[in-house]
Amino acid sequence: MERPPDQGRLACAEVSDEVDVQPVLEAGCERSAGRFGVGFAVEMRFEAAAAIICGVNDVDHAGLSRDSRSAALEDAAGLVERIRGWGRELGFDAVGVSDVDLSDAEPGLAAWLAAGFHGEMDYMARHGMKRARPSELVPGTLRVLSARMNYWPAAEVAREVLEDGRRAYVSRYALGRDYHKVLRARLERLAQRIAAEAPHGYRVFTDSAPVLEVELANRAGLGWRGKHTLLLERDASSWFFLGEIFTDLPLPADARTGGHCGTCRACLDACPTRAIVAPYQVDARRCISYLTIELKGAIPEALRPAIGNRIYGCDDCQLVCPWNRFARLAVEPDYLPRQGLDRASLVDLFAWTESEFASRMAGSAIYRIGYERWLRNLAVALGNAPTTPEVLAALESRAEDRSPLVREHVAWALQRHRG
Ligand code: B12
Ligand code: SF4
Ligand code: SF4
Image (cartoon, rainbow, N blue to C red):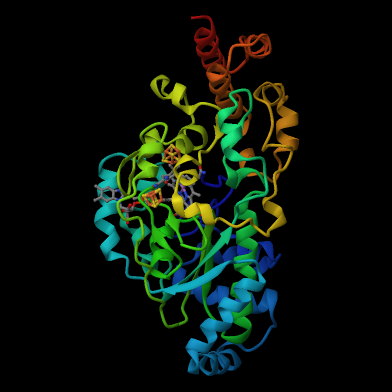
């Protein structure tokens, strides 16, 4: 999944360019901005204060809040249940608690990096094992609250779009509003709600920091890791996003969820590019999600035909999962399809100008890949589309595009139709 390029650009000693710096900044709390440059231990304490200053009330943090924190922790199990309830009120389907020991995930992470499976995603290698060590990333962290939010949208039937080569397939998570914005704001509200009862140092993350989100959520009892590596749950499918609150509250941890894949290997067999090279191992360099979202340059030619009409991300390994037959529709209106993206034709999308792309995709995760990669992806899908006069005309209209990347992909697509 993509990295939000607008995140983590503040000078933050420990997590330089991946950290999610939103909470106090978005709350418009000017005095907080400068504090992110200092060490995390200080920052954690400050953020607790910031939550109070910005969101709750400006009290003597060292005195009053210590008392209310101790009082709240006297019934820590009750506090966790209330947190789950507040989470549900905020639109999360489940919230769980894990401790911060991910040491048994480190060999897998190291093997994945050593195999080069991260491709061009340098941010995956940059922080090394800190990704598996939440308390090194944010000193003072004792527990991680993981939350999941269903995004399965009421939209055109996915299979039907995938089977119609004239239409564009956009992965279900990206049809609506950018989930980073939705989750981040909700997590912040949840963290502040907790702070009102039990003042705490916290940070919120969603796909925005070097964190093993799936491992944490599995330990927090939110589901098991499927062979496609994603988290899934019996009654919740895998169509959900994950986010976390790192906290210094010593809450009781939940029990880890055990797996229910059994002998099934449907996701491995269904992957169009054979990116799931073994159970629980995705070679990102082959994954269509990586190729259409993360990869900046040319898509390897050998993989282009298998991309079909997938122009942004891929859902195949989840669409075939038997547990996803029980998927429920998301209640969050922000995840409803925008701009008719669930049924759009490739030719129509390829005709968008750069300013149309910018205005129509504002607020969508798709905006992040930019116009050039958007056209690159569409050119590949048009190369895989049935040969029609409309498809040929669309491709020819961009044969002399000012971007060499787009020109090369258009030339490849035309060659496929003519050759
Ligand atoms: C990088 C990344 C990607 C990359 C790589 C995917 C991957 N499997 O690693 C790409 C771009 C391909 C990708 C694609 C997608 N992503 Co993504 N992605 C991430 C991100 C940022 C990091 C994942 C990570 O840590 N990978 C590192 C590897 C090492 O972890 P891992 O694969 O889970 O491996 C573990 C084990 O399987 C094992 N292992 C792995 N390889 C090996 C090798 C050996 C030899 C051994 C022994 C063990 C082993 O050890 C590891 C540690 O336990 C997370 C957000 C986050 N910060 O966690 C989102 C995240 C995982 N993605 C998400 C989503 C939704 C997707 C897509 C569905 C999007 C789409 N529709 O296109 C696809 C699904 C593809 C897939 N089958 O994984 C969601 C998943 C939600 C869920 N239900 O689980 C997350 C959590 C984002 C979020 N906040 O919601 N993603
Ligand atoms: S998202 Fe698509 S390409 Fe990536 S592993 Fe799943 S099925 Fe394969
Ligand atoms: S398709 Fe089968 S193997 Fe893959 S995650 Fe679902 S149950 Fe597990």
